[in-house]
Image 1 (cartoon, rainbow, N blue to C red):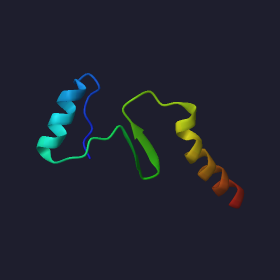
Image 2: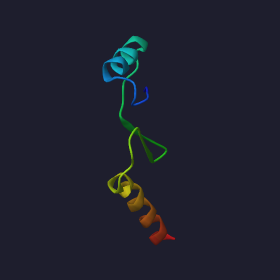
Image 3: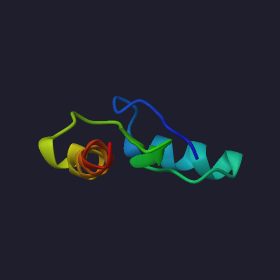
Amino acid sequence: MLMTSMTMPRWKRTRFARSLGFQKVEEFDYLGVKLVMRKLTKSDFSCSLVKWQSKIRQW
């Protein structure tokens, strides 16, 4: 997994990832939290909200 700055040109990011043998990603989940290289939207939190609501109901 390789995350680079969005200011770096796309062709450069692709070449950089290939040369190191990494996979280029735009977003991924880490410990249940979505990590993205863009501004988060309401829909990005929907999965987390569903999980939190179900845990609160059980409590």
